[in-house]
Image 1 (cartoon, one colour):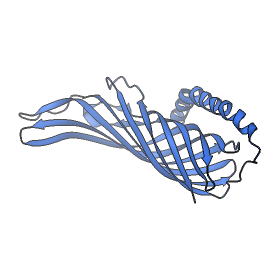
Image 2 (image 1 turned 135 degrees about the vertical axis):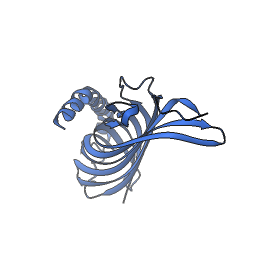
Image 3 (image 1 turned 120 degrees about the vertical axis):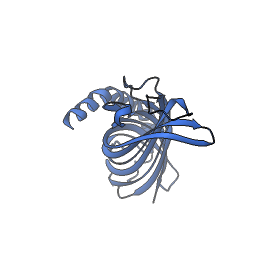
Image 4 (image 1 turned 180 degrees about the vertical axis):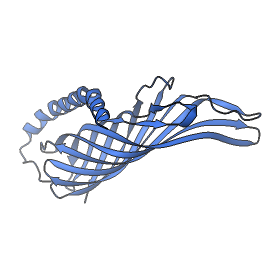
Length: 223
């Protein structure tokens, strides 16, 4: 676990620093131009949804990896003006070249395989309140279910080959939210880096990387 954390920090520190720096530079002139004080959002609870692009981490055992999309929904609680914790259900999907799988009589096998991943994760965000704009950094850990699926075409019998795994993943995130209206609603942009591996049995020896980078639109509703 320590080695995984070290690898994750090395792989993502530059991306997170750049994202956070750009967020701060973008909001600083706007925040300084506001005459209203920064609202106190401590104690608020909120729901949120995420949606955007996913770019898979490259693995030498998986060829021609093609990211599709990432989604998520979650619940959060603002513990103080600078700290919030969240629980979310992230989901992402990408495709790779199909591995060698056991043959089936008269069946045609697709040359591509789909990898779907869904998790249950807990995160902590460190927030810099700046009026209606809020840049932040964060991270967390979660349990993820990953499934590799290869479609088979059998005359009159559609089917597929599936292999799955459950593993622990680590993620870091950075972004900025913009609050509008009077009810604590916000829209924002978030970058996520997920470090996750999965084992799909004998069809793909050992563990393969199924995490990656997501760029997401984020909508929050406070209550």
